[in-house]
Image: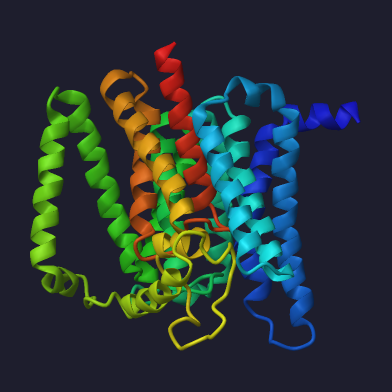
Length: 399
């Protein structure tokens, strides 16, 4: 037993990498993407769930092994997160309580554990980026080998999905690979820089082939966020200037809504998303305060309700109600406050740039996609990590 404990602690980076890769859901998509819905379908779906469960088990094991480090990193943000997960459990008990929803809630707990594991078992952002980086390298390689070479090299190809069910998922994973590879290039040794450069280029090509508008907009948002951080760090009143630009841009967008969407090839309904939101909002009003419980499905399925929520905030309200949404608002508000403090008063350049950039990206992508309370993928665990790490950095700066 002691040898196993020693191995897990000494090789924690490898274990974190495996947990992130299995928890990303890429293998779940890989094993369920091609089977016909026959008698073997349930077995394949079970395999996908077992892969995710393995990731959750690795995460929990590492957290237990690093328990002393966890206690040293304890901040109020940890307790707020505990409050949110506890409320999701309570909401489920008073909502659509069933075996399927309990299994989905277990998946949410597991995905949350991955975020906590990354926070507990790494000393800083630079160390956390290593397993994240290799995880993204593996995901990009899997998608490259999954695609036909002729399709991959054809610049006219559009709407490719790779191993995923939708092109937006490939686009968003490709964007995340670009983001992490970019930070790795500026912070890690030469070997990482070489692999990071190749990964960045390949991920950018996959993003281009996916033609995911949302993911391409995330690249623009990332550049704008980094520019805003630079301005706030370099100028004493830079924050006011950034706020003024945000308000001006928001006003222009509000008065030219249709024109703005036409520029990116979309309409004001966001490819039918507003119709989905309207029907889910009707359900939200039925249990506004408590929510329907995590993983709840509408009792009466319509054309639009058959689809995903396509909005993380709608999903949050539907599952956990106003109470859960208020707890999430506290988490987000604290993270933004702590991030702004670090930008203005700290020399932690890497931490400030990466954590705040990802925080803004996460809050933005949830306008049209559902990564809030997501039980697979890397966006939700990374969001948890970012909020916890920002709180820890703020605590250290106070000391």
